[in-house]
Length: 110
Length: 115
Image (cartoon, rainbow over all chains, first blue to last red; front, side):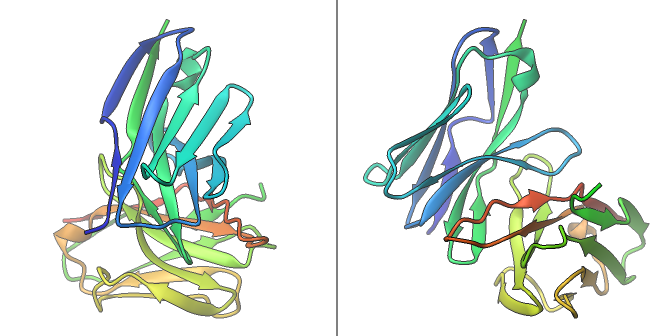
């Protein structure tokens, strides 16, 4: 069966450290993968997209890697801040529809 | 505000009633998506439109759910004979598909509570 798994429900780190979130998938061959941020009571907000032929993409303090052999994407936030506390969702594009993982709730402590 | 809007933001209904939600996407976007999200889960794909054509519908979606996008602009999602298991946040998103990218812009959602 098809699955998208994000490494843990919750991740707690200290301010200034690098947060690393994992997204693993099985039985999918996505054309691209996206990462979204979701705050409580709000809709997700797009952060980054990485295509199957790209290994790494960066945007400010964010970095995403995509390994289609391992079927895994890593999402890094460097120099984390309390304002980065949120739930982060990975999403796989399958034709017209997007499949989301359950998300990882990140808490950055001052 | 030129983002995606949804109406109503909250809906409480009794089991067995019909409900209808509206989504107004970003005006130049040609794709519109509906998702359902329950606590602790990611958004679950329901259906999507490209312009006015409904191109895909989740196999998980029962016949009680129907969506329309009559003029390729706003969309409605109707749930007939609501059940308690329908209680969730219903999210709408829109995107402009170009070069295979599909960055989705989400609305604030409609929270449905079925008593």
